[in-house]
Image (cartoon, rainbow, N blue to C red; front, side):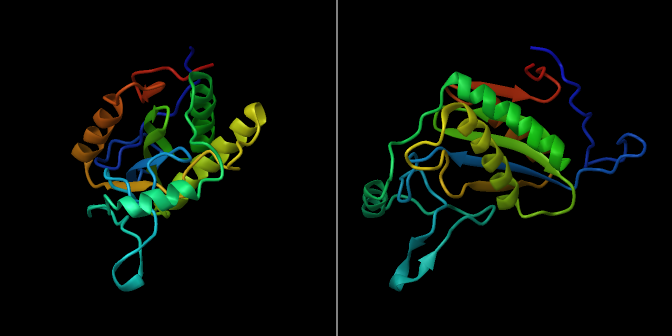
Length: 203
């Protein structure tokens, strides 16, 4: 590995950012699972749309609120709707995804603070300027990563590598950001963990 010159951090929590740069406005912990894993109805919680009380559609993905969870009938229904086998990433795919995450962040002028890529899910700690929709931020990371994966492995039978949505958690202060970074660092059985300022970016 060699350092590709990742930009310095521009903190939103103090005024010591480099001259001529503007501070990051928001930090997010973004999470997504790969296709076919962590289905709607899962006991661990989920953020997919589902039919709630009285047949009304519900979507419980508001930051700082509990996710919907543990609806076995919904989980079984979702499993039967799969159009391909669940996707489990490997180490080579994790490297491709990570390189693309870095490229996407650079192109969008976002700041990656931490990346965790596991076989069935990803975590990103990212800073953004302004207040863009975090779902769109996560969607851009996933979309460009999908293109990079398709170039080397072609599209999977499901036509997608990812679940439709993901979790977006606003990190309201520096303590929350540091806690999110530690959360990423301590993931079990990771394919790749990268922390800004601690690891070089791969060549």
